[in-house]
Length: 248
Image 1 (cartoon, rainbow, N blue to C red):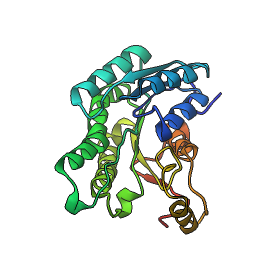
Image 2: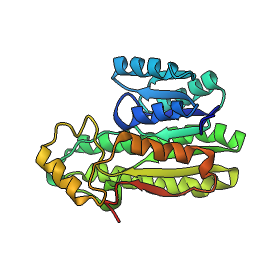
Image 3: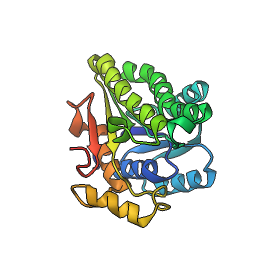
Image 4: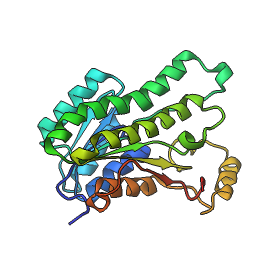
């Protein structure tokens, strides 16, 4: 028996990186997994096949969570396919970095919509089924950048800080219905996005982290599994930093 056996989990933005590992770790712990992807159709189909090979029910949905109509349709389709929603993981996110003085309104709006509005859309759509069943766990993926800011990422930092305030507010609103809302704040995690960085810069970051290494997507996924599982039934409104001690 896995930690999530029999639970039905929906993960957004799961075609690669942290989202993919979250979907896989949930399935490894026995959960049935629905997940979304936007443009990476081949990767989405490959992940669906990989999840099915683990012996659980799995389905990928091509959906844009930043669109409120699409988010509601996604939730309805997920409930129709899986029956219940036990855990929602809001992971979809993008970056469009640049100094504020040169940042376009388009790049601001794109990051806020994909990273923050998508969390609002999906959580709002999920509230009715969660309240009806009187249980559920919502896990939002934020970032240490949302806690301390980062030069060149005003849009990203604002979106991730917004997720933290949103997470805590939802915890207060839905706690009496036994619905929990928590966030996970990854630090420097090695993914496809970090592979293109200067190795000297990467090493400098690692040296500044107390654990002296970058994190892995699995490190983040393990924290998410814990927050969805029944091991954390008295934890809500919290931000768990998965950062090797970077912000201590």
